[in-house]
Image (cartoon, rainbow, N blue to C red):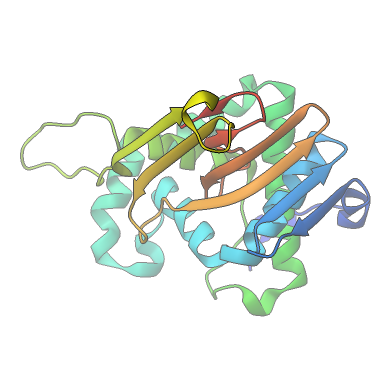
Length: 230
């Protein structure tokens, strides 16, 4: 592993574990409880690395335009597209204007992933080099821009992350249980850099359950007990 891991790893992961707990239910879904945003990100990053380390690190490489370095020429056009779209460049610039909560989540998440790499080097692919907080933003930008309209014939564009999907809700008076029901169905490819990951995150009043993408520290679709989104 290169120096990038050592630059981003948590200086004292034991201290952050004192502020966070991960409980896995019968389906293996992580329920993360934390006292601070950094600890929440740290524990969630560690849990994701435990489940999907290689896929997550490869997704960051795709977003940063560095996939061909390990997978060869078939990814060259994808890398050129990522560089042209500025995923990594814009992500780095965005770090300077992030709100404190989001910045702490991203920083903690990177520390958690890198702490897992330290503790379990045997689980890492040979090319693993850890991650940085900006990788989170680069991946999110790559996801969003994959769905932007590009209509230049003959030019490469990344396949849309989500081709279709649906969500719907039923009021209590229309369900046999008498409860409100919310259903979301994101139609996603199983392979590729954008894959769904189920989790529950709790930090004081911030208590959300749903799904995110491998490599993100926030839930993209889900509910907080009062509102639901998809």
